[in-house]
Image 1: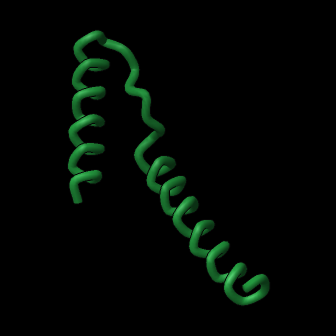
Image 2: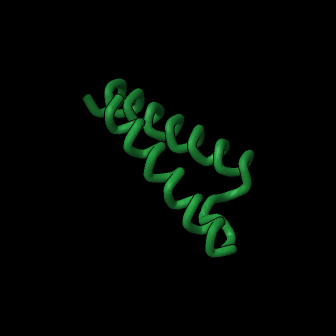
Length: 56
């Protein structure tokens, strides 16, 4: 839980700094970002299943 709070705080700070400097936010479009995160999670889970079933 501490890692999640630290990541959220760091992200908020970076967003605040970039907005204050009138720079584009260093983040993908909302839906593209969410899709990427879900894809990374699903790929990791798929590898776990493959490695347990076929390699383990």
